[in-house]
Image (cartoon, rainbow, N blue to C red; front, top):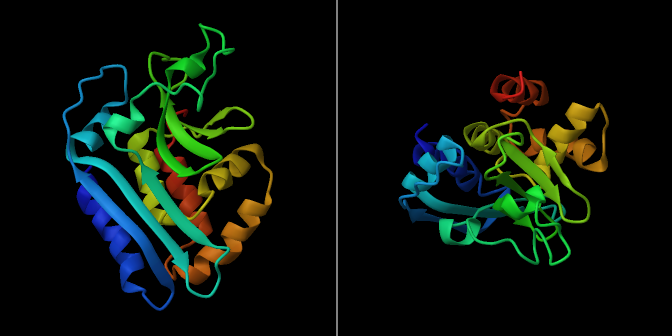
Length: 201
């Protein structure tokens, strides 16, 4: 996947709609070489091309709806997660000690990956107050979904609701708001895309 081109395409859509959005921050970094064989090859490919990606926007007329993508730079993502992901009391054999934060989009939640845990593949949503939940997509699939949502806050919970057959406030708000922000967005097409990039089928 041409990650940088794809990122440029979907960020440009937001940038051009300047009557709807305020862009608070947008940053990418030059690629770095990573050789960690315990990580998704698509994730390593991304970092070889783009070292982190930050994109933050607000809607002009509704401050409650915003988007934030914060794919950490390699030197921040692949560091020990002590006191954020795990703590002194976390058992030594806990998988959480191998969890890396990748997309740190809000203070209270993130999306990350497990290294050295082949039984926990793909991207996982982590609610810091609870536990991790598999999104059942690899990194490339995650980026494709990011492109559709433009990082609309808590779009990951929409996926989790879809998987569980429930509908939280976040999903209701997503369904009502996103089509008004992005004219080409269709919820059913979004779910079809999700189904096409799932790795658990």
